[in-house]
Image (cartoon, rainbow over all chains, first blue to last red; front, side):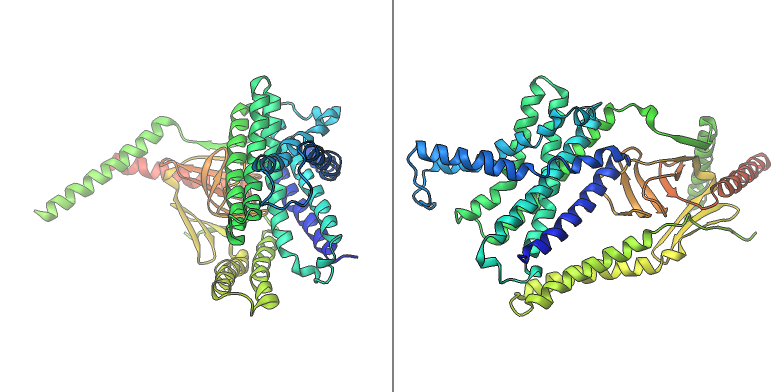
Length: 280
Length: 182
């Protein structure tokens, strides 16, 4: 067995616990969203093998761009095209489980759309971690390394699983809102995806150092945390306040509060008067 | 009058603290052990800094977990966690006492499953000064007239609320008597 598979197992288990736990906690401990961690698992392999690769080959052949030309000889438009392949196609395929009625039924409100999107995106990220591990395992250069040498894979994939979740949450929220929001939601997801991939792309072009590339992932993570918070806040504003269960044991009357406040004011004035007298 | 002591609800919060502290220490030490000589000086400094600044305080907080308790005397409710956290709430300042579930947000200071300490931002009620063995469920929320909120999780919730109400009544009547005498 290739050593990276051990790290892949650790990564997928840790990501499932961490992001599944976050989904469970943020959604108000609703278990019904947890099974969404399953349907996206095969989608990364599917989109890479069945869509991205054939489309890239087709367009390359059409434009007479030979394979293995290297960055220097490849036209800029084709590089941009390759860069956009992942955001455009992956954001579309990540929401295909919504074709299943049980998944679609979870879109009861804006919050439901948010947690459904987060679950589907994390699921895609978990599948992508497995697919990438498979790709690395095919390279003889990595076979001699011990499993614990792949900590970069672990940390990157942990973050990327969450980032995939947020991107899909943006897309599914737009889809739920309907009309023009469908387009904006999709473009928002694509833009976030492009932002996440930009560091790696610039590194491959030789425009960014490895340290800055890793920093760009951190920036992406921070941006996505803000985006998720904004989506969650809007979803809460739309939710019915009657859903919160509360037991009120004690509540002071307003006039009693005013009495306490004025009493404090009186004490303060008295203290000030005493201080002034002492000063005199 | 001796203060009444109330213990918190039991929880596994200390296990999370221990796990998190050990994980951070391991992540800090592991690269040093694997690639120590290849790391630049700032790599050593960063790893050891993060390990010591987060891992060790985490272990210390875990050790103080059994000290979490609430003290109620004639005029004040005090929430304590080791030597690092003491919140004093004058009974006369309490505006409301309610039990509710809080909605967590992604922002957090120290909030883990089974433990919430210090000022923690929540999505629905804003920032709450927590000294509790739960992150969000079944929190006894005390709000003061000044608008500050405190979150606690007493094991004997009914007992604490009854004692609080009794003493708050005494404190109110005492205040009324003082006003009348003036």
